[in-house]
Image (cartoon, rainbow, N blue to C red):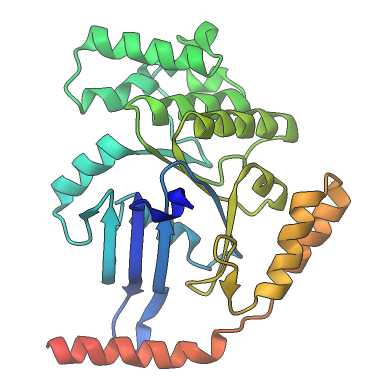
Length: 290
């Protein structure tokens, strides 16, 4: 109960993200409210176009909301400047991407050391810290390898090391196993689980229902909204998702997991009838401001 009463490390209140103008308006996030406590491991699921990546971009300060408020560690970062966002992001958040995003002409050591340059570390200090983090992910013998000389699993471990280089409190992983085989995916997920156990807050976007077993909370998104949050067990379609969540928690069978995945992906769009109204509301807001 004490954990519920602490100030959330991430607090998003009625956050929307709108792209385009007039008839071309697209609502990517629709008045999303979410609280994340320090040390949670959250899995965010939902079909393509549900708003998962947009939500992660806002949480990671890669984008800013059109409406609503975002509090990070008790500080309102909804409307901070681009330079301020970059500094807060550098000091608090580490990113892990599906496509690794390593620089091909740099060694593993240099890729991991790169974020430390933005903190003003000397080259010697950067390389020493990067070496320590690579050792932590089991790649001390691959420090001087180029990305083209590494396997997919090794590339993702380098990406994890880079995310950890600045010792962030929050890790955002966007489909971290999407390009990996099952063995490499298991290694990466065990690594994320270990990072979580050291006290980091981990938010992971995934399409793979089997990976949610590593999380202690599951969120399901649909059409820019959170339709189910396991923490509060509230949402517009909780019963169907709850059955899916229970199956995920209890099953180790790949075939059953595939059936659960199909169940989730074919969930009815319970909010589709509200979308035109939301679009009109946003257009009215814009006209009122003009």
